Length: 229
Picture (cartoon, rainbow, N blue to C red):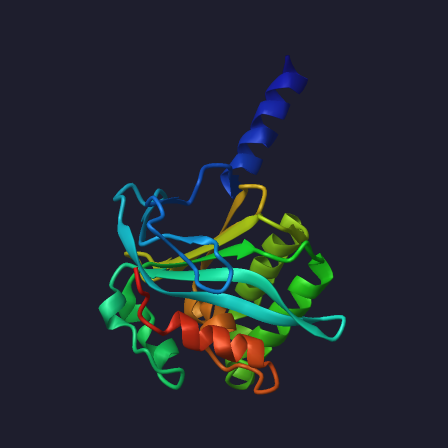
């Protein structure tokens, strides 16, 4: 009985770190992305705060990437926000406007046959490094960033048709919460005391972007273009 009780305690501890419920419930699709033909969603309702906040589509587009020297469609990205009107649709100022947009989410649907985990972690890490401003900033949010990358690693590589979701917001006490729902439906929660942490994660797609990565630059432009539904 003692061993059984200990097992229940350990299971409860694990469940408190990882949830298996859907982070967002998406509205039925009424349109398709022009480039990929994949369905897009006009809105999504969050399930994590108990308030069922509705997030509206800000923009969507396909991320192109080099695969063996050829440009290929990697994934479809859809950006949602609680207050879309607050987002400045300018790459130079968008990151600073994300907080005013309230809760925000990004849904990625994989188009490539396979995106290896090593490639995902490398691209995310490089993008995050471009959004660091000075050593003090690095020290302040390093642990939260590492927790995010650990969640990405736990999720593994991605295959065609799989989806991942990122949901971020500032809580009532001023701390920030990021939920990374991997392609297996496991929702990993990262609580951070680093101001602007969520914006930096979303900065992978909406922040300082490597000027040589035309595919990501084009995706940012698409995400900041009002959708045609």
